[in-house]
Figure 1 (tube, rainbow, N blue to C red):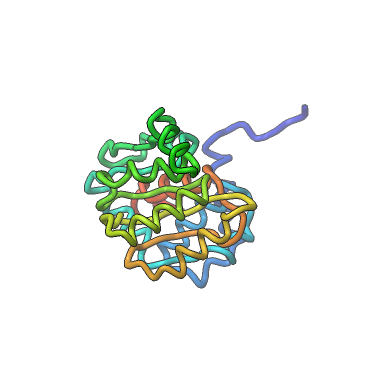
Figure 2 (cartoon, one colour):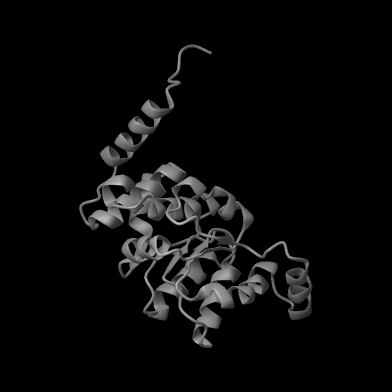
Length: 212
């Protein structure tokens, strides 16, 4: 196999050094740049920077919410499991009801996806929460619908649904909605649970210096 780098701390140091060296972060605020570095590190693609869309001070809002004990709402178990519990400042709860049998029954009755049906379970926890979507475009569409219906606003939306059907459109809908809710999203088809979890982990780490 030959020799390869084994020291985890050195691997991490070089990884983030490489990301910062290959990314032009000059157009971003320090907090946006620190979050963007974590996203690039999670997917290995420096070109996502051009497709990131920002609404409001999402890093600051999400970080403050977590510091005050806000829950994290995830659309998929992969997102929930990707969140590093040790980073969470207040042992924040992580909620994902996708696997609840009642969700499957509701989805079948309504003729929708389980991911969209699960969003209706978010309502009691939504106020001031950090929402992380890393899988289903229908979850983001349904979130926008219930917010338009008067559901309480979360503190921040981390929107990274992925796929060929609806992913780009759901993120465009978020951008066009003009919500007074801070968000970050990745335009187009790309996204995924690793990005959504990385965004939460970045917020949980705290100050910009610790995020980079």
